Length: 275
Image: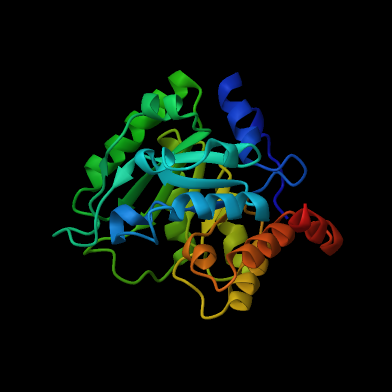
């Protein structure tokens, strides 16, 4: 289980208040659902998809969602009464000549006006534009520090020279170190492949780690099983997008993953789902 190592007491009062809206006060963990994919791959559903999905996720027990600034305006603010809003500042498309390139498409000030509880930046280490992406991460971190806004760094090893890694733990630990050194508040990383390996990564990083979900699972039960395994590690939470919104029953998958992540008894989960 994730051990609180004091990270929630760091930073300005504003940063700490916003973090308290993202992380469960009992477990100090968070289930974050990224829905920023539409810039990269196209619409995730109908025009009201983001609003409908946000309503469902809030009712099922998700702790936060990630969307772009324009998409946030299409979501009923009432859905954020018990769920946090993280606004994504990076963009790139799958039809670009360089699919690993990411650029900033918003500011921390934009996100404050939207009522965001945090912002996120995507960095592909190994990309031909790695230097620009790292500079963007550092600049956003400085703005977040000034304005009291938590920053989630989404860190990946992607690029023409990355190849296959012989030691995933070292790679993920390096990505966590970059996020830490450049001023992020939280970091999103891929899963290391096993509980033991992921614990080695978590023990190397002073930031709370959110584990990425990756592509949609073959079945809803497979997504829940995967989440349950990750929940046994010392990470601070999960960042599951397609594993949840592409599920046959997104509500069931969300509520069950949230229950296991936060170590809640089954009865509590059922009561929450029916509330």
